[in-house]
Amino acid sequence: MYKIVATALCLALPALALAQKKDSPLPSPPAAEKLDLDTIARIRDEGINRSHVMEYGAALFDGVGPRLTFSPDYQKAADWSVDQFKRMGLANAHTESFGETGIGWRQIGTSVLMTAPATATVIAQAGPWSPATNGETTAEVIAIPTLHTEKDFEKWKGKLAGKVILYGDAPKTSPNPPTPIQSYDATRLQHLFEYPLDGDQGETDVLPTDLTYWSKVFTPFKESVAKFFADEHAVAALIPGGSNGAMHDDTGTAAFGWFVFKPEHKQLIPGAVVNTENWMRMSRLLSHKVPVSVRINIQTQFSGDKVDGLNVIADLPGTDPVLKDQVVMAGGHLDSWIAGTGATDDGAGVIVAMEALRILKALDLKPRRTIRVALWGGEEQGIYGSRGYVVSHLASLKYPQNEVTKNLPEFVMLPEKVTPKGDYNTFDAYFNMDNGTGKFLGIYAEGNTPAASIFRQWMEPIRDLGFTTVSERATGSTDHVNFDQAGLPGFQFIQDPRDYETRTHHTALDTYERLSEPDLRQAATIMAIFLWNASQRDAMMPRKPLNLNTPKPLEGLYPTK
Image (cartoon, rainbow, N blue to C red; front, side, top):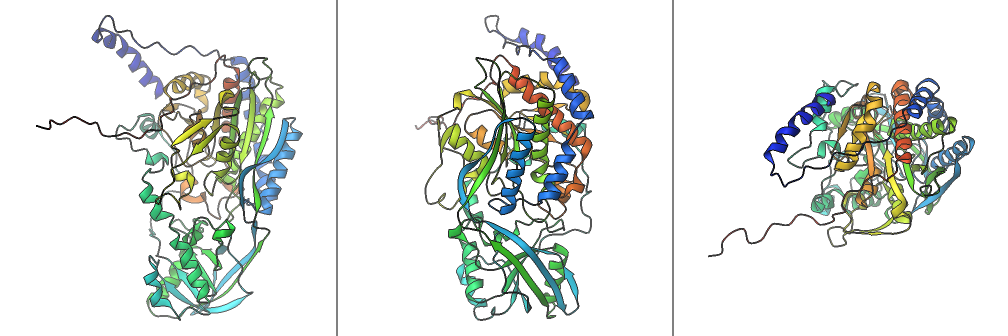
Protein backbone atom coordinates (compact mmCIF):
# COMPACT_ATOMS: atom_id res chain seq x y z
CA MET A 1 0.00 0.00 0.00
CA TYR A 2 2.57 2.58 1.08
CA LYS A 3 4.86 1.78 -1.83
CA ILE A 4 2.12 2.82 -4.29
CA VAL A 5 1.56 6.09 -2.43
CA ALA A 6 5.30 6.82 -2.26
CA THR A 7 5.67 6.24 -6.01
CA ALA A 8 2.80 8.62 -6.74
CA LEU A 9 4.45 11.31 -4.62
CA CYS A 10 7.77 10.88 -6.43
CA LEU A 11 6.07 11.18 -9.85
CA ALA A 12 4.34 14.37 -8.71
CA LEU A 13 7.57 16.14 -7.72
CA PRO A 14 8.65 17.30 -11.24
CA ALA A 15 5.23 18.87 -11.85
CA LEU A 16 5.44 20.52 -8.46
CA ALA A 17 8.84 21.96 -9.33
CA LEU A 18 7.52 23.45 -12.59
CA ALA A 19 4.68 25.10 -10.72
CA GLN A 20 7.05 26.90 -8.33
CA LYS A 21 8.98 30.09 -8.97
CA LYS A 22 12.54 29.59 -10.09
CA ASP A 23 13.86 31.36 -6.99
CA SER A 24 11.72 29.23 -4.64
CA PRO A 25 13.81 26.24 -3.51
CA LEU A 26 12.24 22.84 -3.07
CA PRO A 27 12.30 21.31 0.42
CA SER A 28 15.38 19.22 1.04
CA PRO A 29 14.73 15.48 0.87
CA PRO A 30 15.18 13.63 4.16
CA ALA A 31 18.71 12.50 4.84
CA ALA A 32 19.32 8.83 4.24
CA GLU A 33 19.33 6.76 7.42
CA LYS A 34 22.42 4.63 7.96
CA LEU A 35 20.80 1.32 8.87
CA ASP A 36 22.86 -1.58 10.20
CA LEU A 37 21.14 -4.31 8.19
CA ASP A 38 23.36 -7.08 9.57
CA THR A 39 22.36 -6.24 13.14
CA ILE A 40 18.71 -5.87 12.14
CA ALA A 41 18.90 -9.39 10.67
CA ARG A 42 20.37 -10.72 13.91
CA ILE A 43 17.63 -9.04 15.96
CA ARG A 44 14.98 -10.54 13.67
CA ASP A 45 16.45 -14.01 14.07
CA GLU A 46 16.68 -13.80 17.86
CA GLY A 47 13.26 -12.21 18.32
CA ILE A 48 11.32 -14.48 15.97
CA ASN A 49 13.10 -17.79 16.54
CA ARG A 50 14.27 -17.73 20.17
CA SER A 51 11.65 -15.61 21.90
CA HIS A 52 11.01 -15.69 25.65
CA VAL A 53 8.04 -13.35 25.54
CA MET A 54 5.46 -15.98 26.49
CA GLU A 55 7.57 -17.18 29.41
CA TYR A 56 7.55 -13.64 30.76
CA GLY A 57 3.81 -13.52 30.19
CA ALA A 58 3.04 -16.77 32.02
CA ALA A 59 5.14 -15.76 35.02
CA LEU A 60 3.65 -12.27 35.28
CA PHE A 61 0.00 -12.96 34.50
CA ASP A 62 -0.38 -16.38 36.13
CA GLY A 63 2.22 -16.07 38.88
CA VAL A 64 1.45 -12.50 39.96
CA GLY A 65 -1.96 -11.84 38.44
CA PRO A 66 -3.76 -8.47 38.41
CA ARG A 67 -1.64 -5.49 39.44
CA LEU A 68 -3.75 -2.64 40.76
CA THR A 69 -1.72 0.49 41.41
CA PHE A 70 -0.62 0.86 45.07
CA SER A 71 -1.64 -2.75 45.83
CA PRO A 72 0.58 -5.46 47.37
CA ASP A 73 0.21 -7.32 44.04
CA TYR A 74 1.65 -4.34 42.16
CA GLN A 75 4.61 -4.30 44.52
CA LYS A 76 5.11 -8.02 43.87
CA ALA A 77 5.07 -7.39 40.11
CA ALA A 78 7.52 -4.51 40.43
CA ASP A 79 9.93 -6.63 42.47
CA TRP A 80 9.63 -9.46 39.94
CA SER A 81 10.35 -7.07 37.07
CA VAL A 82 13.45 -5.66 38.75
CA ASP A 83 14.70 -9.20 39.31
CA GLN A 84 14.17 -10.10 35.64
CA PHE A 85 16.09 -7.05 34.47
CA LYS A 86 18.96 -7.91 36.79
CA ARG A 87 18.96 -11.51 35.55
CA MET A 88 19.28 -10.40 31.93
CA GLY A 89 22.22 -8.20 32.88
CA LEU A 90 20.76 -4.71 32.64
CA ALA A 91 22.24 -1.94 34.74
CA ASN A 92 20.62 0.18 37.43
CA ALA A 93 17.45 -1.94 37.67
CA HIS A 94 15.31 -0.36 40.37
CA THR A 95 11.94 1.00 41.38
CA GLU A 96 11.38 4.71 41.85
CA SER A 97 8.42 6.69 43.11
CA PHE A 98 6.38 8.58 40.55
CA GLY A 99 5.45 11.14 43.18
CA GLU A 100 1.92 10.07 44.11
CA THR A 101 0.67 8.03 47.03
CA GLY A 102 -2.60 6.15 47.30
CA ILE A 103 -4.57 3.56 49.19
CA GLY A 104 -3.16 0.06 49.28
CA TRP A 105 -5.99 -2.36 48.53
CA ARG A 106 -6.76 -5.83 47.26
CA GLN A 107 -9.75 -8.08 46.76
CA ILE A 108 -9.90 -11.22 48.88
CA GLY A 109 -13.09 -12.57 47.35
CA THR A 110 -16.50 -11.44 46.15
CA SER A 111 -19.66 -13.51 45.83
CA VAL A 112 -23.16 -12.48 44.79
CA LEU A 113 -25.98 -15.04 44.54
CA MET A 114 -29.54 -14.22 43.54
CA THR A 115 -31.88 -15.93 46.00
CA ALA A 116 -35.27 -14.66 44.77
CA PRO A 117 -37.36 -14.95 42.69
CA ALA A 118 -35.03 -17.78 41.60
CA THR A 119 -31.53 -18.88 42.43
CA ALA A 120 -28.67 -17.83 40.15
CA THR A 121 -24.95 -17.26 40.37
CA VAL A 122 -24.11 -13.63 39.66
CA ILE A 123 -20.68 -12.94 38.19
CA ALA A 124 -19.24 -10.07 40.21
CA GLN A 125 -15.98 -8.52 41.37
CA ALA A 126 -15.40 -5.88 43.99
CA GLY A 127 -14.97 -2.44 42.53
CA PRO A 128 -11.34 -1.35 42.99
CA TRP A 129 -10.88 0.36 46.38
CA SER A 130 -14.33 -0.74 47.57
CA PRO A 131 -14.76 -1.31 51.31
CA ALA A 132 -15.94 -4.74 52.46
CA THR A 133 -19.46 -5.65 53.43
CA ASN A 134 -20.12 -6.64 57.01
CA GLY A 135 -19.70 -10.31 56.22
CA GLU A 136 -22.25 -12.24 54.19
CA THR A 137 -25.71 -10.69 54.03
CA THR A 138 -28.98 -11.59 52.34
CA ALA A 139 -30.86 -8.47 51.31
CA GLU A 140 -33.61 -7.15 49.08
CA VAL A 141 -32.49 -5.36 45.92
CA ILE A 142 -33.72 -1.89 45.02
CA ALA A 143 -33.09 -0.23 41.65
CA ILE A 144 -31.96 3.41 41.56
CA PRO A 145 -31.19 5.13 38.26
CA THR A 146 -28.19 7.43 37.98
CA LEU A 147 -28.61 10.39 40.34
CA HIS A 148 -27.60 13.82 39.09
CA THR A 149 -28.24 16.36 41.87
CA GLU A 150 -28.74 16.31 45.62
CA LYS A 151 -32.43 16.98 45.01
CA ASP A 152 -32.57 13.45 43.61
CA PHE A 153 -31.71 12.12 47.09
CA GLU A 154 -35.09 13.15 48.52
CA LYS A 155 -36.98 10.36 46.73
CA TRP A 156 -34.80 7.69 48.34
CA LYS A 157 -34.36 8.93 51.89
CA GLY A 158 -35.46 6.37 54.47
CA LYS A 159 -35.83 3.59 51.87
CA LEU A 160 -32.31 2.15 51.58
CA ALA A 161 -31.45 0.71 55.00
CA GLY A 162 -30.50 -2.96 54.68
CA LYS A 163 -30.96 -2.91 50.89
CA VAL A 164 -28.59 -3.77 48.05
CA ILE A 165 -28.78 -1.03 45.42
CA LEU A 166 -28.85 -1.88 41.73
CA TYR A 167 -27.36 1.47 40.74
CA GLY A 168 -27.21 3.21 37.39
CA ASP A 169 -28.81 3.22 33.99
CA ALA A 170 -29.07 0.03 31.96
CA PRO A 171 -26.18 -0.28 29.48
CA LYS A 172 -27.02 -0.53 25.81
CA THR A 173 -26.76 -4.08 24.58
CA SER A 174 -27.30 -5.78 21.24
CA PRO A 175 -28.18 -9.36 20.27
CA ASN A 176 -25.68 -8.87 17.45
CA PRO A 177 -22.36 -8.15 19.17
CA PRO A 178 -19.33 -7.20 17.08
CA THR A 179 -17.08 -9.92 15.72
CA PRO A 180 -14.64 -10.70 18.56
CA ILE A 181 -11.50 -10.70 16.41
CA GLN A 182 -10.99 -7.63 14.28
CA SER A 183 -8.02 -6.78 12.06
CA TYR A 184 -6.87 -3.70 10.20
CA ASP A 185 -6.88 -4.37 6.48
CA ALA A 186 -5.19 -2.28 3.77
CA THR A 187 -8.20 0.04 3.53
CA ARG A 188 -8.17 0.77 7.25
CA LEU A 189 -4.41 1.34 7.29
CA GLN A 190 -4.72 3.69 4.33
CA HIS A 191 -7.36 5.59 6.30
CA LEU A 192 -4.99 5.90 9.28
CA PHE A 193 -2.20 7.01 6.95
CA GLU A 194 -4.35 9.91 5.71
CA TYR A 195 -4.31 12.86 8.08
CA PRO A 196 -7.81 14.10 9.07
CA LEU A 197 -8.18 17.60 7.65
CA ASP A 198 -11.06 18.36 10.02
CA GLY A 199 -8.65 17.97 12.94
CA ASP A 200 -10.75 15.26 14.61
CA GLN A 201 -8.46 12.52 15.92
CA GLY A 202 -10.90 11.06 18.41
CA GLU A 203 -10.93 7.72 16.61
CA THR A 204 -7.29 7.28 17.65
CA ASP A 205 -8.17 8.06 21.29
CA VAL A 206 -7.00 11.68 21.34
CA LEU A 207 -9.07 13.14 24.18
CA PRO A 208 -11.29 16.21 23.79
CA THR A 209 -9.76 19.45 25.09
CA ASP A 210 -13.06 20.99 26.26
CA LEU A 211 -12.49 21.31 30.01
CA THR A 212 -16.13 22.20 30.63
CA TYR A 213 -17.03 18.79 29.21
CA TRP A 214 -14.56 17.06 31.51
CA SER A 215 -15.83 18.97 34.56
CA LYS A 216 -19.17 17.20 34.05
CA VAL A 217 -17.45 13.80 33.84
CA PHE A 218 -15.25 14.22 36.91
CA THR A 219 -17.85 15.76 39.19
CA PRO A 220 -17.45 15.53 43.00
CA PHE A 221 -21.17 14.77 43.15
CA LYS A 222 -20.38 11.10 42.46
CA GLU A 223 -18.65 10.91 45.83
CA SER A 224 -21.73 12.50 47.40
CA VAL A 225 -23.85 9.66 46.01
CA ALA A 226 -21.67 7.04 47.73
CA LYS A 227 -21.84 9.01 51.00
CA PHE A 228 -25.63 9.27 50.72
CA PHE A 229 -25.97 5.50 50.23
CA ALA A 230 -23.68 4.85 53.20
CA ASP A 231 -25.49 7.38 55.41
CA GLU A 232 -28.77 5.66 54.54
CA HIS A 233 -27.23 2.35 55.70
CA ALA A 234 -27.48 0.51 52.39
CA VAL A 235 -25.60 -2.81 52.32
CA ALA A 236 -23.84 -2.37 48.98
CA ALA A 237 -24.25 -1.14 45.41
CA LEU A 238 -24.11 -3.24 42.24
CA ILE A 239 -22.84 -1.47 39.10
CA PRO A 240 -23.39 -2.78 35.54
CA GLY A 241 -20.21 -3.94 33.85
CA GLY A 242 -20.89 -2.52 30.40
CA SER A 243 -22.16 -3.44 26.97
CA ASN A 244 -19.71 -6.22 26.04
CA GLY A 245 -20.38 -8.61 28.89
CA ALA A 246 -17.59 -10.26 30.89
CA MET A 247 -17.80 -7.42 33.42
CA HIS A 248 -16.75 -4.82 30.90
CA ASP A 249 -15.42 -2.81 32.43
CA ASP A 250 -14.37 -3.25 36.03
CA THR A 251 -13.67 0.46 36.42
CA GLY A 252 -17.44 0.79 36.77
CA THR A 253 -17.30 2.04 40.33
CA ALA A 254 -15.91 5.30 39.00
CA ALA A 255 -19.64 5.91 39.35
CA PHE A 256 -18.63 6.89 42.91
CA GLY A 257 -15.74 9.17 41.93
CA TRP A 258 -12.57 8.90 39.88
CA PHE A 259 -10.25 9.55 42.82
CA VAL A 260 -11.36 6.71 45.11
CA PHE A 261 -7.71 5.59 45.30
CA LYS A 262 -6.90 8.67 47.38
CA PRO A 263 -7.67 8.59 51.11
CA GLU A 264 -9.44 11.96 51.05
CA HIS A 265 -11.81 10.57 48.41
CA LYS A 266 -12.25 7.10 49.91
CA GLN A 267 -15.37 5.25 48.75
CA LEU A 268 -17.84 4.84 51.61
CA ILE A 269 -20.27 2.24 50.21
CA PRO A 270 -19.24 -1.34 49.33
CA GLY A 271 -19.57 -1.81 45.60
CA ALA A 272 -19.27 -4.61 43.06
CA VAL A 273 -19.20 -4.61 39.27
CA VAL A 274 -21.67 -7.17 37.93
CA ASN A 275 -21.76 -8.97 34.60
CA THR A 276 -24.09 -7.03 32.32
CA GLU A 277 -26.41 -9.95 31.65
CA ASN A 278 -26.89 -10.63 35.38
CA TRP A 279 -27.45 -6.95 36.13
CA MET A 280 -29.99 -6.60 33.30
CA ARG A 281 -31.95 -9.65 34.49
CA MET A 282 -32.36 -8.17 37.95
CA SER A 283 -33.22 -4.78 36.44
CA ARG A 284 -35.98 -6.24 34.26
CA LEU A 285 -37.46 -8.18 37.18
CA LEU A 286 -37.58 -5.08 39.33
CA SER A 287 -39.09 -3.02 36.51
CA HIS A 288 -41.96 -5.57 36.45
CA LYS A 289 -42.40 -5.25 40.24
CA VAL A 290 -40.96 -8.71 40.91
CA PRO A 291 -39.02 -8.68 44.21
CA VAL A 292 -35.33 -9.61 43.94
CA SER A 293 -33.02 -10.66 46.76
CA VAL A 294 -29.32 -11.49 46.77
CA ARG A 295 -26.82 -13.02 49.15
CA ILE A 296 -23.70 -10.87 48.97
CA ASN A 297 -20.23 -10.94 50.49
CA ILE A 298 -17.57 -8.45 49.37
CA GLN A 299 -14.24 -9.23 51.03
CA THR A 300 -11.53 -6.61 50.56
CA GLN A 301 -8.43 -5.57 52.46
CA PHE A 302 -6.75 -2.19 52.84
CA SER A 303 -3.01 -1.94 53.41
CA GLY A 304 -2.33 1.71 54.10
CA ASP A 305 -3.40 5.17 52.97
CA LYS A 306 -0.04 6.44 51.74
CA VAL A 307 1.49 3.73 49.58
CA ASP A 308 4.11 5.01 47.12
CA GLY A 309 3.29 4.69 43.44
CA LEU A 310 6.22 3.03 41.68
CA ASN A 311 7.79 2.80 38.25
CA VAL A 312 10.37 0.17 37.29
CA ILE A 313 13.49 1.39 35.44
CA ALA A 314 16.53 -0.41 33.97
CA ASP A 315 19.28 0.49 31.48
CA LEU A 316 21.34 -0.98 28.70
CA PRO A 317 24.18 1.57 28.99
CA GLY A 318 25.44 3.47 25.98
CA THR A 319 29.06 3.09 24.90
CA ASP A 320 29.76 6.14 22.73
CA PRO A 321 31.88 8.67 24.67
CA VAL A 322 29.83 11.55 23.26
CA LEU A 323 26.34 10.01 23.06
CA LYS A 324 26.17 7.60 26.01
CA ASP A 325 24.32 10.06 28.27
CA GLN A 326 21.51 10.43 25.74
CA VAL A 327 18.54 8.13 26.41
CA VAL A 328 16.22 6.14 24.15
CA MET A 329 13.30 4.61 26.04
CA ALA A 330 10.73 1.86 25.61
CA GLY A 331 7.90 0.91 27.89
CA GLY A 332 4.37 -0.06 28.78
CA HIS A 333 2.34 0.15 31.96
CA LEU A 334 2.73 -2.50 34.61
CA ASP A 335 -0.47 -1.70 36.49
CA SER A 336 -3.81 -3.23 35.55
CA TRP A 337 -7.37 -3.55 36.75
CA ILE A 338 -8.48 -6.61 38.70
CA ALA A 339 -11.20 -8.52 36.83
CA GLY A 340 -8.68 -10.46 34.70
CA THR A 341 -4.90 -10.61 34.99
CA GLY A 342 -4.06 -7.59 32.85
CA ALA A 343 -2.51 -9.64 30.07
CA THR A 344 -3.43 -7.38 27.14
CA ASP A 345 -3.80 -4.14 29.12
CA ASP A 346 -0.98 -3.62 29.40
CA GLY A 347 0.88 -6.78 30.29
CA ALA A 348 1.56 -7.27 26.59
CA GLY A 349 3.38 -3.94 26.45
CA VAL A 350 5.39 -4.88 29.53
CA ILE A 351 6.58 -8.24 28.22
CA VAL A 352 7.30 -6.82 24.76
CA ALA A 353 9.51 -4.12 26.26
CA MET A 354 11.15 -6.71 28.48
CA GLU A 355 11.72 -9.10 25.58
CA ALA A 356 13.09 -6.28 23.38
CA LEU A 357 15.77 -5.56 25.96
CA ARG A 358 16.46 -9.27 26.37
CA ILE A 359 17.02 -9.57 22.61
CA LEU A 360 19.53 -6.72 22.57
CA LYS A 361 21.34 -8.06 25.61
CA ALA A 362 21.37 -11.66 24.35
CA LEU A 363 23.08 -10.47 21.15
CA ASP A 364 25.61 -8.54 23.27
CA LEU A 365 24.88 -5.38 21.30
CA LYS A 366 26.62 -2.19 22.39
CA PRO A 367 24.35 0.79 21.70
CA ARG A 368 25.88 4.22 21.29
CA ARG A 369 23.13 5.81 23.39
CA THR A 370 21.71 4.37 26.59
CA ILE A 371 18.57 2.32 26.03
CA ARG A 372 16.21 2.53 29.00
CA VAL A 373 13.17 0.40 29.71
CA ALA A 374 10.38 1.81 31.88
CA LEU A 375 7.39 -0.05 33.29
CA TRP A 376 4.88 2.50 34.50
CA GLY A 377 2.51 2.46 37.45
CA GLY A 378 -0.69 4.47 37.75
CA GLU A 379 -1.52 4.54 34.03
CA GLU A 380 -5.09 3.42 34.61
CA GLN A 381 -5.65 6.19 37.14
CA GLY A 382 -4.48 8.91 34.74
CA ILE A 383 -0.99 8.16 33.26
CA TYR A 384 0.54 9.09 36.61
CA GLY A 385 3.70 6.99 36.34
CA SER A 386 5.02 8.42 33.09
CA ARG A 387 4.01 11.95 34.08
CA GLY A 388 5.90 11.50 37.34
CA TYR A 389 8.98 10.43 35.41
CA VAL A 390 8.75 13.43 33.07
CA VAL A 391 8.30 15.84 35.97
CA SER A 392 11.08 14.27 38.04
CA HIS A 393 13.69 13.99 35.29
CA LEU A 394 12.79 16.08 32.26
CA ALA A 395 10.47 19.08 32.69
CA SER A 396 8.04 20.76 35.03
CA LEU A 397 4.49 20.95 33.68
CA LYS A 398 2.10 23.70 34.73
CA TYR A 399 -1.58 23.00 34.18
CA PRO A 400 -4.42 25.54 34.20
CA GLN A 401 -5.82 26.24 37.64
CA ASN A 402 -9.30 27.73 37.93
CA GLU A 403 -12.82 26.87 39.04
CA VAL A 404 -13.39 24.60 36.04
CA THR A 405 -10.16 22.61 36.46
CA LYS A 406 -9.99 22.28 40.25
CA ASN A 407 -11.61 18.82 40.27
CA LEU A 408 -10.05 17.52 37.06
CA PRO A 409 -7.26 14.96 36.74
CA GLU A 410 -4.25 16.32 34.87
CA PHE A 411 -4.47 13.74 32.09
CA VAL A 412 -7.48 15.50 30.50
CA MET A 413 -5.69 18.88 30.45
CA LEU A 414 -2.91 20.29 28.29
CA PRO A 415 -0.02 21.94 30.12
CA GLU A 416 0.06 25.71 29.71
CA LYS A 417 3.75 25.95 30.54
CA VAL A 418 6.65 23.51 30.12
CA THR A 419 9.96 24.27 31.82
CA PRO A 420 12.85 21.99 30.78
CA LYS A 421 15.09 20.66 33.51
CA GLY A 422 17.48 17.86 34.32
CA ASP A 423 17.83 15.44 31.44
CA TYR A 424 15.60 17.29 28.95
CA ASN A 425 18.39 18.01 26.48
CA THR A 426 19.74 14.46 26.54
CA PHE A 427 16.40 12.72 26.14
CA ASP A 428 16.10 11.22 22.67
CA ALA A 429 12.78 9.37 22.21
CA TYR A 430 10.21 7.15 23.91
CA PHE A 431 8.40 4.21 22.25
CA ASN A 432 5.23 2.83 23.85
CA MET A 433 3.00 -0.23 23.44
CA ASP A 434 -0.47 -0.23 24.97
CA ASN A 435 -3.16 -1.46 22.60
CA GLY A 436 -3.44 -5.15 23.36
CA THR A 437 -1.66 -8.22 22.04
CA GLY A 438 -1.81 -7.36 18.32
CA LYS A 439 1.25 -7.10 16.10
CA PHE A 440 2.79 -3.80 15.06
CA LEU A 441 1.37 -2.58 11.75
CA GLY A 442 3.02 0.82 11.87
CA ILE A 443 3.54 3.83 14.10
CA TYR A 444 1.83 7.13 14.88
CA ALA A 445 4.32 9.95 14.34
CA GLU A 446 2.34 12.48 16.42
CA GLY A 447 2.53 15.20 13.79
CA ASN A 448 6.33 15.01 13.78
CA THR A 449 6.99 15.12 10.02
CA PRO A 450 10.80 14.74 10.22
CA ALA A 451 10.40 11.73 12.52
CA ALA A 452 7.84 10.24 10.11
CA SER A 453 10.36 10.45 7.26
CA ILE A 454 12.89 8.59 9.43
CA PHE A 455 10.38 5.91 10.38
CA ARG A 456 9.52 5.31 6.73
CA GLN A 457 13.15 4.41 6.11
CA TRP A 458 13.26 2.18 9.19
CA MET A 459 10.13 0.47 7.87
CA GLU A 460 11.72 -0.97 4.72
CA PRO A 461 13.72 -3.86 6.30
CA ILE A 462 10.68 -4.94 8.34
CA ARG A 463 7.90 -4.44 5.80
CA ASP A 464 7.70 -8.21 5.30
CA LEU A 465 6.84 -8.56 9.02
CA GLY A 466 3.64 -6.60 8.40
CA PHE A 467 4.94 -3.16 9.43
CA THR A 468 3.68 -1.00 6.55
CA THR A 469 2.19 2.28 7.80
CA VAL A 470 3.64 5.50 9.19
CA SER A 471 0.85 7.89 10.11
CA GLU A 472 1.37 11.50 11.10
CA ARG A 473 -1.77 11.31 13.20
CA ALA A 474 -1.63 11.53 16.97
CA THR A 475 -3.00 8.88 19.29
CA GLY A 476 -3.81 9.34 22.94
CA SER A 477 -4.81 7.97 26.30
CA THR A 478 -1.54 6.31 27.27
CA ASP A 479 1.96 6.98 28.53
CA HIS A 480 3.69 8.44 25.46
CA VAL A 481 1.36 11.46 25.76
CA ASN A 482 3.27 12.94 28.70
CA PHE A 483 6.49 13.00 26.70
CA ASP A 484 4.79 14.51 23.66
CA GLN A 485 3.10 17.25 25.71
CA ALA A 486 6.48 18.15 27.21
CA GLY A 487 7.84 18.72 23.69
CA LEU A 488 9.76 15.44 23.57
CA PRO A 489 9.50 12.69 20.95
CA GLY A 490 7.02 10.14 22.27
CA PHE A 491 5.41 7.55 20.02
CA GLN A 492 2.85 4.74 20.10
CA PHE A 493 2.74 1.88 17.61
CA ILE A 494 -0.25 1.10 15.40
CA GLN A 495 -1.38 -2.36 16.45
CA ASP A 496 -3.74 -4.90 14.98
CA PRO A 497 -6.75 -4.58 17.32
CA ARG A 498 -7.70 -8.28 17.47
CA ASP A 499 -10.16 -8.58 20.42
CA TYR A 500 -8.80 -5.74 22.54
CA GLU A 501 -11.83 -3.43 22.29
CA THR A 502 -14.40 -6.19 21.77
CA ARG A 503 -13.45 -8.62 24.51
CA THR A 504 -10.39 -8.04 26.70
CA HIS A 505 -10.05 -4.33 27.52
CA HIS A 506 -10.70 -4.02 31.28
CA THR A 507 -12.60 -7.30 31.50
CA ALA A 508 -12.38 -10.67 33.23
CA LEU A 509 -11.28 -12.12 29.87
CA ASP A 510 -8.03 -10.15 29.90
CA THR A 511 -5.88 -13.20 30.62
CA TYR A 512 -2.94 -15.16 29.22
CA GLU A 513 -5.25 -17.11 26.89
CA ARG A 514 -5.97 -13.95 24.88
CA LEU A 515 -2.30 -13.40 23.98
CA SER A 516 -1.15 -14.00 20.39
CA GLU A 517 2.36 -15.43 20.53
CA PRO A 518 3.24 -14.72 16.85
CA ASP A 519 2.09 -11.12 17.21
CA LEU A 520 4.06 -10.60 20.42
CA ARG A 521 7.20 -12.07 18.87
CA GLN A 522 6.84 -9.66 15.97
CA ALA A 523 6.16 -6.68 18.23
CA ALA A 524 9.14 -7.35 20.50
CA THR A 525 11.40 -7.78 17.47
CA ILE A 526 10.30 -4.48 15.94
CA MET A 527 10.54 -2.72 19.30
CA ALA A 528 14.14 -3.94 19.61
CA ILE A 529 14.92 -2.75 16.06
CA PHE A 530 13.45 0.70 16.70
CA LEU A 531 15.43 1.05 19.93
CA TRP A 532 18.61 -0.06 18.18
CA ASN A 533 18.10 2.28 15.22
CA ALA A 534 17.45 5.26 17.49
CA SER A 535 20.43 4.46 19.68
CA GLN A 536 22.81 4.36 16.71
CA ARG A 537 21.88 7.54 14.83
CA ASP A 538 24.44 10.33 14.65
CA ALA A 539 21.75 12.84 15.60
CA MET A 540 18.96 12.66 18.15
CA MET A 541 15.40 12.20 16.96
CA PRO A 542 13.89 15.49 15.71
CA ARG A 543 11.51 17.34 17.99
CA LYS A 544 8.33 19.19 17.13
CA PRO A 545 8.16 22.89 18.00
CA LEU A 546 6.61 23.20 21.44
CA ASN A 547 3.54 25.36 20.94
CA LEU A 548 1.35 25.77 23.99
CA ASN A 549 -0.85 28.51 22.52
CA THR A 550 -4.36 27.60 21.43
CA PRO A 551 -5.53 29.15 18.14
CA LYS A 552 -7.19 32.57 18.49
CA PRO A 553 -9.50 34.28 15.98
CA LEU A 554 -7.77 36.79 13.72
CA GLU A 555 -8.61 40.42 14.33
CA GLY A 556 -9.28 43.05 11.69
CA LEU A 557 -10.78 40.72 9.09
CA TYR A 558 -13.99 42.71 8.74
CA PRO A 559 -14.27 46.41 7.92
CA THR A 560 -15.59 48.54 10.77
CA LYS A 561 -17.04 51.25 8.55
